[in-house]
Length: 379
Image (cartoon, rainbow, N blue to C red; front, top):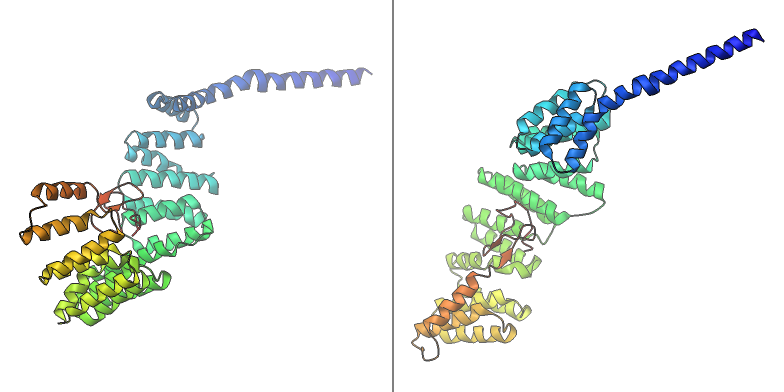
């Protein structure tokens, strides 16, 4: 009985000591150690970055194993315009041997963002690639890699990463992939490799038969090599594959037919387009301009009048008619003020607008000069 009592007393003492150590002695130390980190997070949530930075710096000073504190401190420095300092902090984490795959991905993500903010795209891409080496279907890594590839005009990488991203997202976007292939081709052509560039354009057409940029790029490549007939063929392919984009080829077609001594064929082409697609206002305008060049003013006026019957809101045709009437001395019902007014209206309403950033232009563009988006003008 006495022995049992002594064992009981010993157990109570041990339990008491353990309770004191973990709850009374050790707990305040843990609480004290975590306090700066918690305060730092609270300051971040409160929108006080300077106080947050001070607390996070204190947190990593007290606890060098607090990975999240290091990550948030670096991110905060990057947001304050100090990407080099942020990269230095995040780089120090890469030598730690206790990081699991998820931790490594977070560290590489922050480093990719650091170098991107610093304008060092190649290093940013390196760390994005490390993420993808650890997790090939990482959606953030793929999306970020696509963005970097576009920034660096690395169209082959943009193509491959977008293809992989589409697979991850379970969707198909051959139109964008085709644009990347065309950009690849254009880059090759700019370096004097027109033949290789045309191969890329052919690949683009296989992906998206209606890729207008591919046909235009092919035509311009053939024009550079004085292969007018081949250029005409590609433009006709454009008219067949994407007739609503035919207006993008009209000026080139006119020049080509003129050089080939077949200028009369262009009028037949325009009239054939209007017959098949009476809603094609661009074809009517092109035909009116052509007839004006030939000095056939009355026929040009009739074309404009017919266009206005189908498109009563069209300002261009009215302005064109006013201009021709003035040239022919028929000024009894028109005046310069009308032309100036219409010019102003047209100038304030560019034809094309970027769906991503709202950039407006009168030029048909595939890549937005403002936000670098591809295919955002909905041509």
